[in-house]
Image (cartoon, rainbow, N blue to C red; front, side):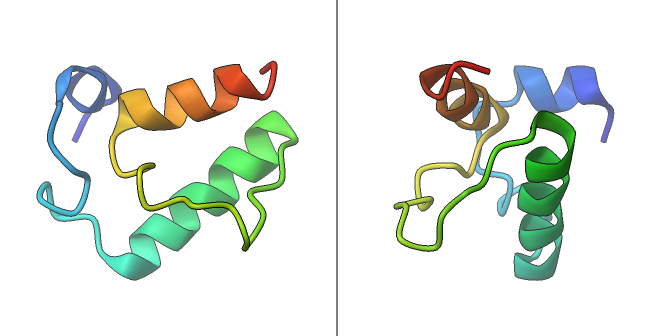
Length: 62
């Protein structure tokens, strides 16, 4: 999946084939790239779309 496709996709990443391991890797990549720590206590259940991840980062000033 291209970045443009992911950004345009309103569906859950899981519905697009992202596995739980892939999701963990995605969160790790976001943490590494943007210097943010996604806390285990954070409710990340809503971070299952690219727009939701972008909103999460914006809320943290990134």
